[in-house]
Each structure stands twice: as structure tokens, then as C-alpha cells.
Length: 277
Image (cartoon, rainbow, N blue to C red):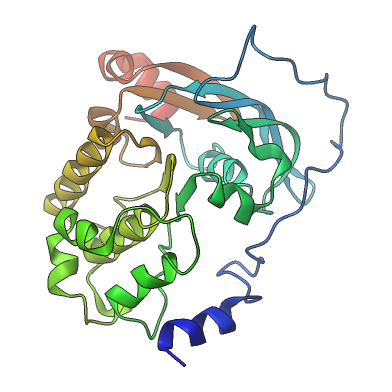
């Protein structure tokens, strides 16, 4: 039995780093009265999130978030610590924590809110979590092979090595022994190994040197050229804004601003109030 197959068997019911199963549950009834979701005057955009509410236990975290994303856009999802950015991203990916209780999530006219996490992944959601989830005991190439063990397949491994030459040079090296920047490249490459339509990035620049941040930025621009839509959650707001087309700012689980990235860069009062920069 190959190393990849052994890991597949061992991971089938293994909890993630937060002790949650990778599976998911359908939306549950909201804990408070919320009016029914109605469309915004027409069909959903390429990606649409309408009136999304989510909880950690009894803690009300995502409070009626609504926004649309056009195909091929890079959107920066910003806010202070505790604003609900990562929680929103996880709810969009249909993870079971936080528990989404109300709302609609559409990707390319498919209703993700009716799906479990693995179904949303098959429908085109690619989440790169903050902790990267590089699998111990597997080489760089085996991590990529594991991502393609079942369809739908995305970029070929050789094409990924063209995008990330460092990974090609280290293809036989155990993934967890890579530098932080290289692990981030591997995490993004692993997402692209699937046939994704929307890339969700949670804190991709965290702990990385500025030179590596610039390298990741160039990669995301290259990914955009191939038509992949991206939502990026990032504490380094200025770096994210220079990369993004649009910015959405969360405050206490609600949207405080939705506009162009240039508007945020040009508005010092807005940055100071909601981003502390």
C-alpha cells in the first residue's frame, strides 16, 4: 500500500486541528427570528453570500453578512481582530464550525448552503486555512497527489511546479520540513490541484518575510490571470489592499464597508476606524 493511500485511510474520520470533523451538517434553524432570505433583485453573481448568520456555540459571530463577488476578482476581507473574518471564510466553505444557521451561499449558480463541506469542495471551493494543514510524513509531491486522489482534478503537478519552482526543487522533501513560505506555497498548490472556482485564503502572509510575501503576491496575480476568483483574509491589510480589486470590511460580524480597494487606501479615516492603520 502506498504512503498516500495509508494517509487517506487514516484521515477518513480524523478530526482537524481544532477537533472538528472535516464533514459538515446542513444549516440548522436560526436561534433568533430572521426574515427569509430574498434575492437581491435577480440571479446570484458568480459568487454570492446572502444574509449569512453563524455561531460558535451560543456566540453569535457572523451577523447577516451579504456580498457578491464577480468572476476573476480578488477581494480582501478585512477587519480588526475578532471582527469575524476567519469565521465568515469558514462558513462560506461550509465547515461545521462556526455553525451557519441561516442564509444563502451561491457559487456559479450552485447553492452551497445546501451542501456539506466535502460537497462544496467538489463544487469548486478551495480553502487554504491559516494553519496550512500540511500532512506529516508525506513529501511535497505526495501532498499534491493526495489532493488529486479523487476527481475533480485541477492543475497538473508539473504545471504547479512551473508556478512554484521551489516546490519542484523540493518535491521529495517532507512537506512539514519546508520553510513557512514554502509551506504556504504548498498549501496554495494543493488547493489548485483540485478543480476550483473560488480560492479562500486565510492569513496567507502570516509569519512570512516581506520578500516571501511579494512572491506569494506575484503567484496570486498569476492565478488571477487564469480566471480563478479569490477571497483573501489578511491582517496585513495594506499588502492585501494593493493586491485586491475590492475590499469588504467586517466589524463585529457585520459588513461596515464594501467597495474598491483603492477607496480604502485613499480613506485614512476609514482605515483608522476599522483597521487601526
